Image (cartoon, rainbow, N blue to C red):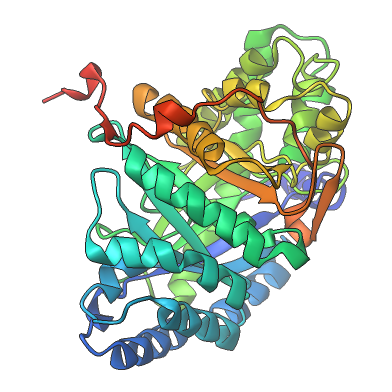
Amino acid sequence: MLTIEEVLETIKMVQDENLDIRTITMGISLRDCIDSDHISACRKIYDKVTRLAGSLVKTGDEIAREYGLPIVNKRISVTPIALVAEASTVDNYIQYAEALDKAAAEVGVNFIGGFSALVHKGFTGGDRRLIESIPQALSSTERVCASVNVATSRAGINMDAISLISRVIKETASRTANQDSVGCAKLVVFANVPEDNPFMAGAFHGVGEPDCVINTGVSGPGVVKSAIKRAGNVDLGALSETIKKTAFKITRMGELVGRTAAERLGVPFGIVDVSLAPTPAVGDSVAEILEEMGLERCGAPGSTAALALLNDAVKKGGAMASSYVGGLSGAFIPVSEDAGMIAAVNDEALTIEKLEAMTAVCSVGLDMVAIPGDTKEETIAAIIADEAAIGVFNHKTTAVRIIPAAGKKVGDQVEFGGLLGRAPIMAVNKFSADRFVRRSGRIPAPIHSLRN
């Protein structure tokens, strides 16, 4: 039973500190939609998604009204389409993307994730066809999101896949140039990808998941920042305890919403992803949390240590609150989606190299980073490889969502609007990694992957 103090505290979190449930994501298996006839397969996909997710948006809106807790997004993730479409004989998978987009529009969700391939140890024909279809898919649909897993701690890093996806990123940027290359904002390259991530653009429904499931993603950077401010000049141990307790409260709310949605929709509850996911709104910034902890600007010396403390405390608080914490869970540091990150880049406090260092201790990686449009494919591949190495050699998930904005240079800015925000174009190291990238092959898994 909630006390009156807890009710009032929650109201304050919502009204003054930007607390929300960032997403309710329904995961749907499409394995029973596989068909050698792609037209039949696409029809099955549309029918299954619209049947299972038909009430998702309505249910989310009802719960938000009843609890007085904003639920910002309702989304869908599906089985990686490379696995579903491979039985067909078509040369590209654009019709599968169109079927997903049509289904997402019908049920009213803002994004559907799963135009994806898992190629950390090599390609199948279907994997290649899907990856090569990504530029057209993301430029011709509105709601479809894509992801590719190129590395794991067990398999190592597939440099051939990284080279291919770098070319795809450049082509996607070119195809959506009239929208500041926004297509790249819907494409994530992973190492050690989780199967139950509810956040876009990297969500897909893993093969180990049930036929249908509800996962929730909570947010709350503003709540954590306010709690740190109230704590005052305490030592770092007490600061960690403050963040832990706050994350506990946020997670409990996220699980309550997720379980309620799952019950009303008649599907299992999966996980709650306890991630501090920022928005461009003032006061909803992970960078500002680090600054409240004592940094003059995010990116200053000490940023990696402060982020490590934050990320760990969030995970500990979430784990205390729920036995079903999953997905990514921790702190996100996307540049374009965080007003404090944008300010840090504009003030020259934050560079790509410092961001990369910070990704060693955060939940994801180089996220929503805009770079000059003339950046070479090989340079993009090397950036992705660096990030994958951090994930593979530290047994954690890392990812890259990078935007080589067509026609833009350092000092310019891209505007995406909504949750995707805006981003200053960041400088890229001018020295070449071409010879290294062109060696191709696979970087072997680290020795500590031999755990059996």
